[in-house]
Image (cartoon, rainbow, N blue to C red; front, side, top):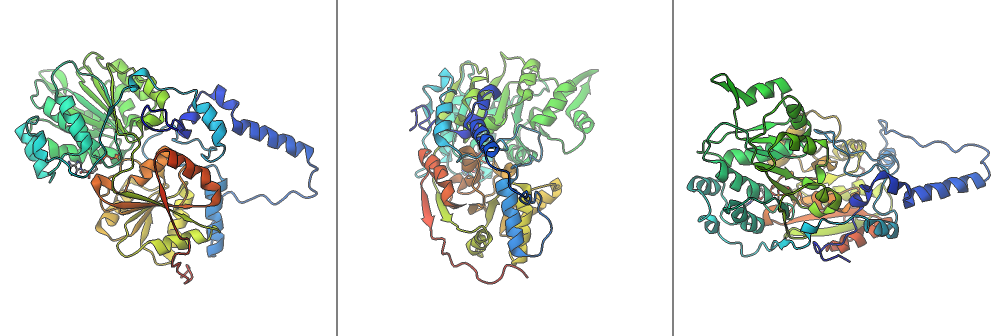
Length: 515
Ligand SMILES: Nc1ncnc2c1ncn2[C@@H]1O[C@H](COP(=O)(O)OP(=O)(O)OP(=O)(O)O)[C@@H](O)[C@H]1O
């Protein structure tokens, strides 16, 4: 049961995993390993060592072998989700599965507690029916920004925008905000609009807003929205995300006026890794007024501490956003927020999202189920738990005539961008990906999310499923599962997610999946 704080249950595997190492040594996993080791010592040695399992998927022609390899990569190998842009701590530990032992995890979760400022959150309405017209914001907004919003075809105000934009535009001493609102609920506009409005009357050229996001793709996405919003204002913005060299970025960022160095832009959108490089090479942030951390529960790291040394704390207002902010109370406690206020809509499901599950028996049924789910008008993101699985599944689906691309592994940036472009244009029906794209990516054409592999944490499921049913539209998230995943669905139920069970006897295409 939830503790009433966010109206969510406290059980959260990511949080448990982030406990200090000392405690995790005593974990049930360690104990289980010890017990297994003791058992092995007591057991008589087999005459011949059993053949070791394969560790890597090798090129194969036979579909059955490919499916087996997929399962080896996914279920038995260490699960590694490569972070494309940034070297963050991995979101999930490599040897942890959420469905290992719920009771033990429940005991541990008590160790993590929320900071006091989380105790009385402001609740954001999650209702997307009867949205107020954009006109409602007119009294708060500068005419230029209002026109820019109209030019972006926004006619209504989303609940999180209605709650936060006026709050941020209010006069008076600024307070730090932490905002948890569902995926696709319009958080980007929520922080950009007040920042643009407050910075519009520029006095001197200086970096006054910094928006930090986990990947370059997300940085670019926010940058594009920002460009629309700053039209016809004096403001300028720039991405620092490592697309060009550090030197080139520095040169672009600094101008010399009367022998003195000034910044060329007001708003910086950055990824943490490249931001660290700039902090090391002397980026001037003494006039910073806004620090936005998007996907905040995913943004731990040394960068934040370093940043604080470079800014004037009395000036900076911190704004944290995520659909799963409450997944990491220790992180929230460590943030040193000033007069913080929490806004939350709980872990609510996006209004138009339907959650379904399909039970499979044998592993080789999984690709066939996927084939039967992808129809002419389907635009699906298919999530797997490792790069190897993504590449292998893509190969398999292509062989069966499906138009798909994988955007996992060692792809160049332009290759990933190309695949996404094709997806948007409808040239491919599916993208197979890892959790690198589980967060933030805004593809309004995506009407289906498929969890080919069950997600490794509740927060990850929330972000994966949130790639569809965005901005109040309809979408479906289908999770392929077996009986052993039952605890996973109990946990999702605690988060208020209910799943419709679809028959596994779908019209499975019986034609062979090979050419
Ligand atoms: N007032 C609005 N009216 C119509 N569409 C809107 C409005 N505000 C935002 N949107 C659209 O909603 C979509 C989702 O917005 P956004 O990407 O900001 O969601 P988010 O809450 O940040 O999601 P996530 O948690 O997944 O990052 C975008 O395509 C955006 O253009």
